Length: 193
Image (tube, rainbow, N blue to C red; front, side, top):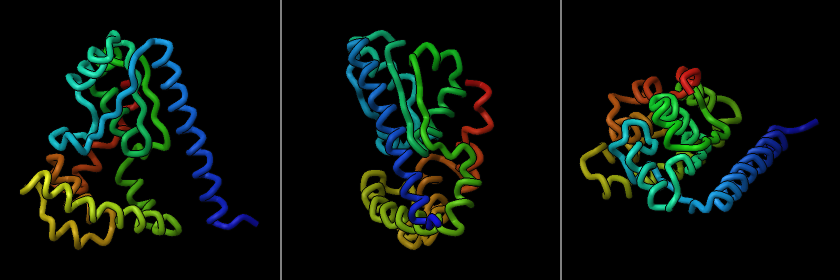
């Protein structure tokens, strides 16, 4: 019988294949349209309410790449995919005019439910590992964006919800983790894409 470790390994393998396929597709489309590939890190733009690229950034990337606005392709994985889908839904036809295609992989469409799932069973192993990477990064963010959140609360976080409440929510203008989860989940907006 398969163990949880074997199942997790299989899932990670399939996710890696999907990510590689999307990246390969984006590279091929960029080559065909002669549009350079760019990456945009939401962490560098903390004033975005949803950590997703805004219209002006996307236009700038398309134009600086020498392509038309419709020659821009975007992909997001996990939370980045959620933010990308939310952006596409909220900007509607304007998003359609800016990007030719979007791809979202392994997306938590309901952030509260995803957090609950990560807080139980075998998922706790991943959540604790992820938290151990987030807490040190909070010190760097605090240096880059002083006064945006309470570093002591960030360093004391024991769960992802604690971290989101202490860092993610205040850094991006939300009242707390619940407000962040409710207002940033792309699931309820998928019909608008």
